[in-house]
Length: 142
Image 1 (cartoon, rainbow, N blue to C red):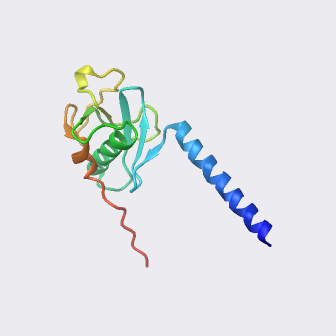
Image 2: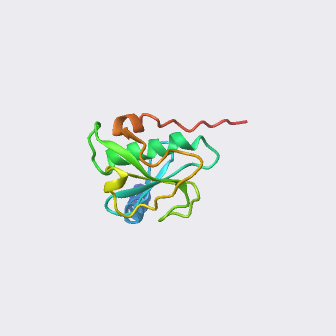
Image 3: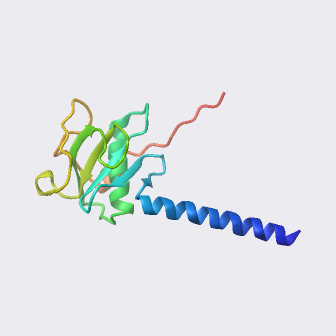
């Protein structure tokens, strides 16, 4: 009986490791509340808002968390909007915003979308300020 328990622990450990490796290979990063972020190139990353949510906060949340946790940017560093809300370059979502740690005029490879909603190109916030806009997902059970 002890051998089966150990085999199950090993199986689930390997399965978890494969899932983490797959996520790392695709570049898919998720904040603690489910906002997805993908790198576009060395300077640009794309934040995908959660469907049916207050997306402007999600964009900033993803930008701040990605800059801090993946790019290891200091809290005072600025994150800049380099492409407004629109279809993604590396994701299949129609609701993405591209960000960079460099101002738009110094950033290569951004789509440069302009839109009627969401943050505007050139808008910026500190990494700490952007990350503070993360909210937890609320779930209502019947």
